[in-house]
Structures are given as C-alpha cells and as structure tokens.
Length: 153
Ligand SMILES: [Zn+2]
Ligand SMILES: [Zn+2]
Image 1 (spheres, rainbow, N blue to C red):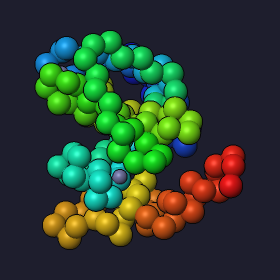
Image 2: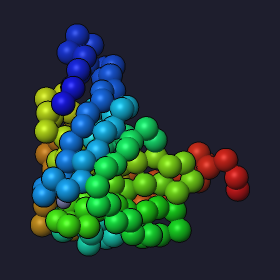
Image 3: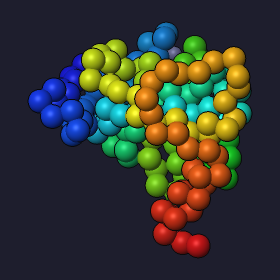
C-alpha cells in the first residue's frame, strides 16, 4: 500500500497508487492513479447493489485486476464488477471512457481521503444523512453534467 496524500496544501489532493484485494483474497487489484476525493452515490441502483450508498473513489483507467472478477452489465452506460467467490464489490466502470469508480472500503490506508461530493441526493432515503460538508447533485444534475462531457450528442 502506497498512499501519499499532500498534507501541505489541502486544496490540492494528489492522486495516489494502491494495491488491494477482496475479502476472500481470490481477487487483487492495482490502481495507479486514485483520487483522494470520495464521491457518494445514493441512487436506487447503487443502493440495491451495495445494500447502502456507494462510497467510491475515481481510479481513472489505469487499473488492473488479478483473480476471479465477474462483470455485470448494469446499464447502457456502466458495468459493475465483483469477486466471483466472495461477492466483494470491486468497481463501477463507465463504458464510454473505461473509467473505474472503486469502493473506498477497498483501500486499506484511508488517511488522505476526503468525502467531496454526493450524487443522486434526491434518491437518498430518509433513514440516513451524512454530516460531511459536500457538493450535492440531484440525479437530473448528474445526467446533465454527464451529457455535457460526452463527446457525441
Ligand atoms: Zn473474493
Ligand atoms: Zn448510483
């Protein structure tokens, strides 16, 4: 595990590289460019998959896996991966960019991580609420932002 957050300037949280594994150790991963900014998704799909909100880290495209990964085609725009043996959630992956969003819980050294934003805040159930000060976006706002980033119409 190699985590090197920048404590001098907290407005610039440097990406780090990390290795980790699932609960049963059948699957391991290496992520070379991991953001320190946590995003939380409250959407119905993420909560069905995770049993709660999806607390994820943007890991870019430079990620490799070794072991028994099963991939589920969860929507037109994304796939979700998990360990075939123990079911540990490994990633949410955008089909268009190959970008991985991986669960923060997979990263053993969490000292430099900060909760930055929450999305699909309008689908969050009432029985929990994070006290963290974050940027919050509704599902419609996320889809609008995603559409504006897409190269094709
Ligand atoms: Zn496993
Ligand atoms: Zn979601």
